[in-house]
Amino acid sequence: MRSETMAIFRFPRAQGQAERSTSGETPPQGAFDALLRLQATLDIEELLANFTSLISGELSIDGYSYTGPRDSAIHCQSGHTNRHALAYQLMVETEHLGELLVYRARPFTEVESMGLEDMLCLLVYPLRNGLRYQEAIRSSFTDPLTGLGNRSNMLPQIQREISLSHRESRQASLLMIDIDHFKLINDGHGHPSGDQVIVCIADIIRSTVRDFDLVFRYGGEEFAVLLVNTDNSRATHVAERLRKNVDMHTCRLPDGHGVSPTISIGLSSLSRQDTPQTLIERADRALYQAKADGRNCVRDHAL
Ligand SMILES: Nc1nc2c(ncn2[C@@H]2O[C@H](COP(=O)(O)OP(=O)(O)OP(=O)(O)O)[C@@H](O)[C@H]2O)c(=O)[nH]1
Image 1 (cartoon, protein in one colour):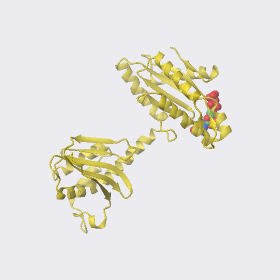
Image 2 (cartoon, protein in one colour):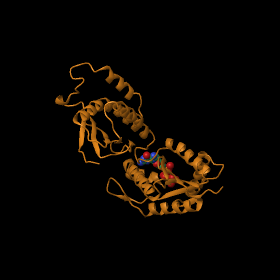
Image 3 (spheres, protein in one colour):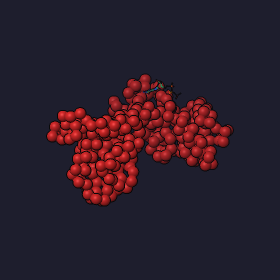
Image 4 (tube, helix red, strand yellow):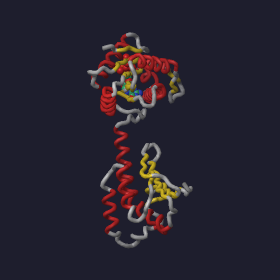
């Protein structure tokens, strides 16, 4: 691919760059129709597909790729890359909306790039609406303190994993994890320090399990981890490693002090009859047992 520079496309455009077709005039009906079509969806992939289909009359391309703003984890592409590219950082005022590249084998002419920029004026607001919607969906499933999945995200995700495990005859195990004597940390160091300890434990859990295991903040100082494709003996091993990792760690508090919390863990492994609720209930009972047995230990709820 020939390396073209990444232009910044900022909307509204500067005076000299005012949209040619609309400067001082009523926008043509075609622009309204195009805008209506782009506004018809909040799905980013569908929006970009609509956009590229709209520009296809004026501009032939072999493919495009779009990467959303940082932290959005949005990436879509269609068709294939080629030698030449037009590349834009998309902005509405100071808000970055990600970057869009369109590719083809032949160089783009200046008239074509100006035509594309006119069309980008129509794309940016529907794109911003779509990104805000996706972000709202993402945050409704995320615990803001730790960035982990929240409780309302947990049941559907566990349900999905249980169905997959049953279908593919895979094992799965659940860990319910609770910080021991957490109230003492809150009472002794204050609520913000308690929050810091919750973040610290969340980080240890995340770094101990594999990327594709599912980690949730279940409530207050309680976490749940679904260990994907993991049988009971392997899950016991992971739980014990997690308990030790927390036991050995000192969490730094905002006031400069350090605390060394411990955790108790209840474990249940998936059986054919399990629903998410029964799997959680058994892990919960095992956690209760771990607390009763003195804390800082792992207990397994055998069927
Ligand atoms: N800082 C902070 N504290 C929380 C949060 N959610 C719940 N808590 C506190 O966590 C504490 C939980 O206390 P308990 O349920 O008695 O449990 P514990 O002290 O951990 O004792 P065991 O679980 O029996 O070991 C309560 O003081 C809650 O107020 C939170 O988001 N942040």
